[in-house]
Image (tube, rainbow, N blue to C red):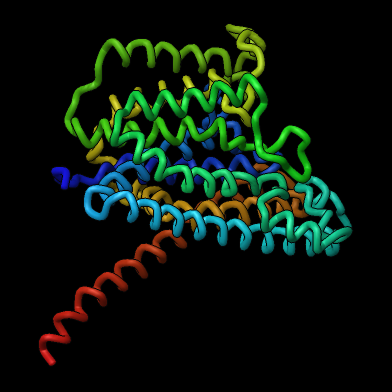
Amino acid sequence: MRPSHPKERDLRIDFFRGLVLIFIFIDHIPNNSWAKGTLKNFGFADASEVFVLLAGFSAGLAYLSLEERGGFRAVAERATRRAREIYVWHIGVFLIASLLLFLAARAFGKPSYVNNIVVGHLATDPVTTLLSALGLYYQPNMMNILPMYVLLMLWLPAIIMLLRRSIPLALTVAFSIWLVTNVTGLNLPSFQMSTGWFFNPFAWQLLFTVGAAGAMVARRAPTSAPRPEILIPAGAFVIFAFLVAAPWVAISWLPSERLLPRDLMGAMSKSDLSLWRLLHVLALAYVVAAIVPKNATWLKQSWANAVSLCGKHSLEIFSLGTLLSFLGWIALAELGSSQLMVAAVNVAGIAIMSMTAWQLSRRKEDRRALAQAAPVQALAS
């Protein structure tokens, strides 16, 4: 048995995971002016990259610890169980969202609610479409992250095994798969995209693996200080990405000139996780980890705790946020997109996500309390 390390919860993980879930909700609402303030406007990467990196990091922490206690078999069993759970949530979101969009299209006489998300095949060929959805071959727009996450969880036991052998070995294997993917176009087939899955799992596994490797490094040296030879280039790259993204251009009352041309970097494929996106999210993560202590006082404040609770229940809140983004789209389309209405939709959605996360945490604490009380009651009787 390997020596375990004392656990001190890193408050940053849940907070920033919750924050990117809120960003994803905002970004998924069409014509949402609040989306100008989300991460995608400040560099090459967006909330999706941060979500997957943090998912890999938190999975690394949890499953490396599990492997120490129960071995590789326990890791494989729990990862498979988690993959099944994500799969069920994805199918549930797909069915509920499709029903919601069809009802909206019928009620308001707007086929765009169905066509823009590409769920119209359910009406024309329901059996084939449902079977394709169950096989993850059919992935409507804005419902294509969880299928990738299913495969990443199935890949996780291999990551843990490789990391136990050598961190460089794990990263080399993951990078090689990413490189082959970007050179050859390797991908899984998709019902509606000739190029394959929008979130190519062969490419995105690299970011997930890097997150898990980061967890192993953090476990080995939990109090290590940031290294200047990494921090300075990382900070410079974050500033460079900011200048290329030029977020001020999207704001009418700010200058519209770019300091650097947007096409300077060439194509930045999100599907295949371009190198620029990968470098940006890694540089950003290192800079944030360097300047934000893991037990910073402000992370314990009530507003930050509300965000962190969303991060603690990422699967449920992501799924809820997806459905709320569809409702927000319908609300803005039917009731108008004034700034007051936009604010109401965003605030309502974030509030519902936060309250749901609080309720989920409360129920989890109640179940834990009952489980702890049961042995005491048994002894008393």
